[in-house]
Amino acid sequence: MYNNLPSNQPTMPNPALQPHGKTTKVAQPTVRHPSPVPPRPNQPRKSHPPIPSSIKKKKDNRWLWVMLIGFVGTVISIMGVLFLGIMMVYSNGILPGVSVSGISLGGLSEQEAVTLLNSEWDTIVLRGGIRPWAVDPATLGITMDARATAKRAHALGRSSGNPLNAIFGHLAVSPIVTINNDVAIAEFQRIAEQVNIPPTDAGVGFENGKAVATPPQNGFSLDVNATVQQFTQSIQSGTNLGEIQLMMVEIAPAISDSSAIVAQAQALLSNPLDIKVFDPVTGDAIYWSLMPSDWSQWLTVTADSNSAIGLALNANPDAVRTFLEQQANTVLDSTRKLDLDAGVQSIVNAIQRGDPTQGFVQVKHQERIHTVQPGESITSIAWDYGIPYLYIQNLNDGIGGVSVGQQIKIPPADIFLTETVNPNKRVIVSISNQTVKVYENNQLKWDWIGSTGIPDSPTWTGVYQILSHVDNAYAANWDLYMPNFMGVYQPVPGADFTNGFHGFPTRGGGQLLWENNLGSKVTYGCILLSNTNIQQLYDWAEDGVVVEIQA
Image 1 (cartoon, rainbow, N blue to C red):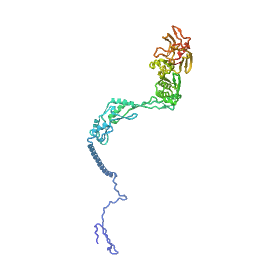
Image 2 (cartoon, one colour):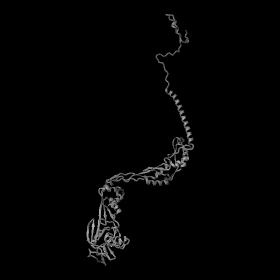
Image 3 (spheres, rainbow, N blue to C red):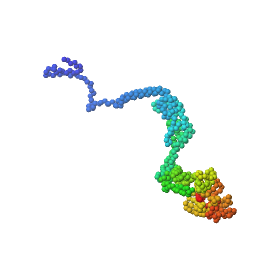
Image 4 (cartoon, rainbow, N blue to C red):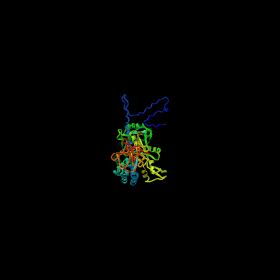
C-alpha cells in the first residue's frame, strides 16, 4: 500500500514493516522557512499601532451625508410637486393662507371674496367702555372697497408677497378703506355720552340711622381725538378691522376724604326730625316726628364749592314729598291738603341748616259745597263761613238768591291768606265781645278793647292777614285820616279800598273821632284801637300775620 504524499512532506516509517527489535533511522527532509530577523537581545517585539477611530467615523459619515442629501432632494422634489399642484388648484382662486382682517379668503374667487367681505364686515365691536357693543361701520364713516381688496388678496403670493407663506403660512391683506373723519368724530362724541363714567367723590352712606363713609371711585372719559387716531391707524393697517379700542382717560374724584361730612351727618342724626304742620285757618298745629333711622334715608351728600370740605348735606326732595303725601292721605279730610311745594322746601332747608326741628308745612283748604237750608240767604251763609258774600256770588256765577236744597260753592277758607304765614303770631278779633287779643307763640301777649263796624257797614268774619302798613291812611269815602293803618281784607273783590286796624281817626283838619266809643260798633268796617295800642300792634305785626275775625 502506498501513500501519495506531497514531495515536501516527510515520510514516516511504518513500524509494522520493520524487523522486530531494530530501529531504522530515516533521514528527515529539510524544510526551509524564511529566516526571521533575529531579535535583539532582551527587547520585545514591536506591534503595529491601531487605526484611529476618527478615520473610521469619516468613513461612516460619508454614508450619512449621502442619505441626507438624498432625503433633502426628495423633500424638495415633493415640495416642488406640491407647490406646482397647489398653484394649479388655486390658479383662479385666492391662495389658501390669505386673509383680510381675520376673514379667510383662501380658495375663493375674486367675486366670491367680494361677496364674503360685504357680508362678514357689517359690524365693528367697540371695546374699552363698561361693555362691548357692535356698531355699523358706516356710522363711523368707514367704507371698504371690497372689490379692490379682493383683487389685492388674489394677487398676494403671485405678483406680490411670499408665495410660500401665501400657501403654507398666513398672509394678512390690508383692506382698502376710506374714513370720513368728521363723521367719525361726531359719532364718537355721541358714544362718549354713553360710555363716560363720572368719578364718585368720597361721601356718606346711612345704615340704621348711622352715617358711614363711602369710598371715592375714579371715573372714565372717552378721549375722542385719541380714539379716532388709533382706530384710523388700525383700520388702514388692517390689523384688526372688526374691533376698535376706545381710548378711555381715567379721572380722579375731586373729594377723596369724607370724614368731616360724616361727623356732620352723625351730629345731625342725633335728633329726631320734627315737622310742624300748621293750619292757619284754625290756628292749630301738630308735629310729625321721625326717628333718625327713618329720615336718614332722605339725606344726600353733594359737592359744594362754598363748603370748606367741598361737600354739603342735603335732603332728597322726592323722598320728603312722598312722606308728606302719605301722611296727608292718612290725617287730612277731603277739604284740606298740604302745601307740598313750600313744605318740601322748608324741610330741605332745615336739614341743610343742620336744624331738623324747624321743618314746617302749611295746611291748605279747598272749595266746599254747601246745601242751602231753610231760612238761609247768601248773606247769612257768607257770614257763617267767614267769607264776604260778594266772593260767594262771584264763585257761583253772580247768583242773586238761593233756594232750599240748592247746592252752592264756597271759596276755600284760606282764600285771603296770600302772604307767607307766620305760625307764631296771631290776632283774634271778637265782634260780639268787641275785643282784640294778640298771641305770640301760643301765649296771650295783649288783650285790648276795640271797636268794629256798624251793622250797615259791618266788619266781616273770616281769616285774613296783615296786608300793608301805612302811617296815616286816608279814606276818601268818609274823609277820614286813620293813623297807623294796617290793611286786613278787601270787602269787595277788586275794590280799591281795604278794611283794617287803625287808631282814632281825624276829620276836617283835626277833629278826633270815636275817642270815647271803644267797645262799641262805630267804624265803617275797620277795627278801632286806642292810639297807644295801635302803635304797639303796628310795630309788632309784620305783613303776613294772621288776623282771625270771629262773630
